[in-house]
Image (tube, rainbow, N blue to C red; front, side, top):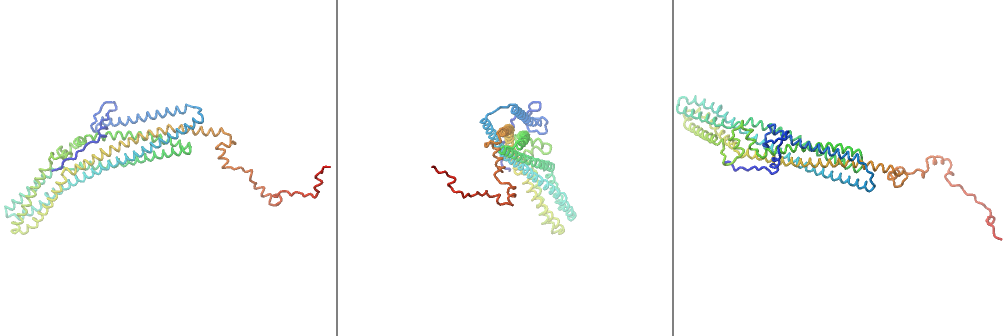
Length: 486
């Protein structure tokens, strides 16, 4: 008997997202039941993306109004006010950069969680496909043995036992048992079509997930580069870097709102599926599998009986009866017909191999293995996947806030750079307290104090030109220069 089912419980964030109002493009209510083939349901998810687009438009309008006000308002501030504004712009940019870095960290975690959930889904689909393919292989192999291999041995034994009617009756009974086994195997569903669909789903999911993960990784790198450019632009007071930051920041703002729209629609749609996954699977498999078989694998409880139990029991009984008949023929017919021993031994090996296949088939048809894969897939999608999408949505909001703040602070920093350059131009170049004059003095020291190259070259012919003139010593007595008093 199958073990008790491990209950799947939708997490609270899935229930919360499922309660988000579903509206069509005409603002009419739409059923929130997951139905991706319904146009109205598709419009409800598209409407969520349009809400993010409206928020982007409002954000851009706010930025335009702010920039226009910045350009139109001209005030002659004092030196203290200018310093205070410069400090405010610097700290605003620093806080915005920290928020952006925190958003990137949250985004990395969300991207990893979503990627882990999707890979868990693909892994579970591959396991289920392996089980379904194994069931089909066992059923087709056993049917081949009963129809072809066993039939050939029975035909040769019919020729050998042609003179014994009782042995012929035994062979006909074995043929009936083989036909009964084939009939029971025909009741096992053929999973080939479902396996092909699940394989295609796994391949497409892996392809989309790879580029989704890579796109977010590139977006994270772009955000960090923009933050670095902003820091360098403020540190070096470079207008070129500041202009580059403003352009790239506008691009990052657009990408942030776009990713928020995609994350919101994907999270709400996935949550609609995760609230009632059994119902959706029952609906899409209605034409391919019987409801009894689908419910058996979805719920896998002790109260649900296996739909294959009767067929497997009949299979086992027929196989056991055939093995008994073969043993009887080996004991009583071989002494009379020695040439029949070879075919009977091969039939016995064939039946033993079929019994081994029966045990494997019974294990594969049991609901516990496939139900575990089903629960693992739900855990990957509804827990890790949706949780990661929520973190990515938070990343997009924080990134949009950070870049909006940077774009607002950028023109103030630009205006401060221009104002500071004009203040330097108004100071006299000869002013020793002028920073520009001091920089010029450092790079261009005064040359008047150094002898020129020409003075050295002209003095090579006369060494006396480099010596001070000699003084004439007079021999006149001192008394001639001093007049003594009378």
